[in-house]
Length: 161
Image: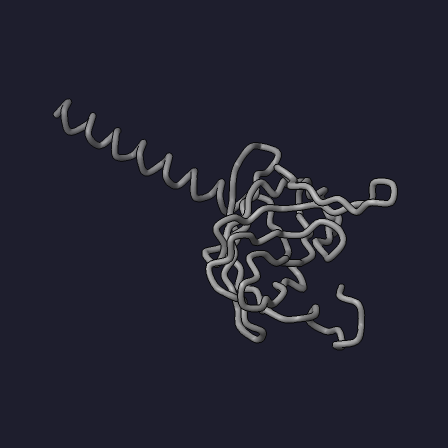
């Protein structure tokens, strides 16, 4: 009888911890993604950018990005330092509650490097974003990004979004 109770208690505890983890994952700061796209490449090109707008319901941090089309995927920032435009990898990107954060050409963006094949216009690529909320709970968001030469909704002669 004692052994059965112990086994039942362990099973209940395991179920409880699993369920709590699933609920915590579901409650992590929901992030709205808008206008996501990746720039098309040509044969031999080993890197490109991906762009989108992110709005977090609660304060959240983008802590990682991955895509099977690239050996390396990182969030980068471009900014002017004097007369020189510099680009650097960002280990994390803060997403303040309710504030839209744009990842766009010339600013924050996802850099896809060591591409395994060219990204063809009118195709789609998978991408996973990894977030961590203020409580330290991680969540991920799987996306399918359209590949284009310009941002969706712009005309070919317009500057990219």
